Length: 414
Ligand SMILES: Nc1ncnc2c1ncn2[C@@H]1O[C@H](COP(=O)(O)OP(=O)(O)OP(=O)(O)O)[C@@H](O)[C@H]1O
Ligand SMILES: [Mg+2]
Image (cartoon, rainbow, N blue to C red):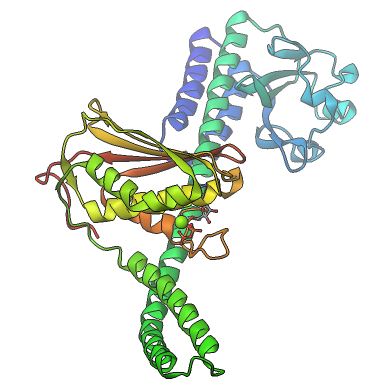
């Protein structure tokens, strides 16, 4: 084969693989792997080739694509065992097998010989310094490889490794996305159902509360009904609070934005909680940035968020402790940051994803709606909420709100 022809074959192999590396869907990976094995076989003037990838489930290398080699011989694979998991040289350079009868990496030398194989070349497939497969080319006669040929093989397998990695990342993201979409779908139908039930229950609860409090007023103080009626009233009231929270959550009230000062909203929320802090002996460390400019927000809704977060912090501290509250103007990103930090019991890592789900609570008297309502409010302000937490050390909730003027904001989102 002329050098030019060989160059063309290698060039095509690299170009085909690069296409997948840069494609958005990566759907034609199998096609490219097939091209890889055929093009490299032709380029090296071999008998055939097989691309072996490590399979976590079977803990062996299985063939993902092959060319020119008898199916019966290939069916003898998968290639398992220590000899395949470690590369014969530390540099992970191509490994040439000249004596197939005595090579530890050749599992079936007799069968290989019978189909005319006399030599093999293994080139590793690496990603992030990890071996995850190799490309094996088979030859019918012994040959000496030029440096150019080995360089080309390295370049092709590098591209191939990228393509496989790229494809598996895309598949992983698609899987994650589908899972999330199903979850959102489930949550929204659950939300609609819950809102319907809440609506239906709200009216009879009002009736129960009204009649029980009337009876309570009429019941004689020493009679047998007073205590029972009081319990009915308390429990009904508790149900109403839950139902109201659920209604607020499902309605996701549209924010009524006005030009307001965030620090003033923070101060007001702290003032409302003052008594609570005093009783629980909680120290507040306040650090408000005076540089924060007025911007469009719904002060009542933001206050509701802050109170929810402060109540959670107080509960997490459960006694003497500290709550830090901080605001900061980020002029570079045109956002403001609010942080609420407590040194309470913290949230285990595996529960961090759950705390914003409606009805997730670890408290005997909690509704589990505080954070999901707060999240909805911040999202309607086009903001974000992030949580950092360490069990036994504490929790930091960070809210980021964009500063928008009313000309470019979408006030219709509800
Ligand atoms: N600062 C915090 N520290 C530790 N855990 C927290 C903190 N904030 C929230 N959590 C966890 O997240 C859960 C959900 O919080 P969320 O505010 O939504 O509901 P809740 O506080 O349980 O009930 P409600 O707000 O209706 O009283 C809590 O039950 C708690 O387990
Ligand atoms: Mg709460």
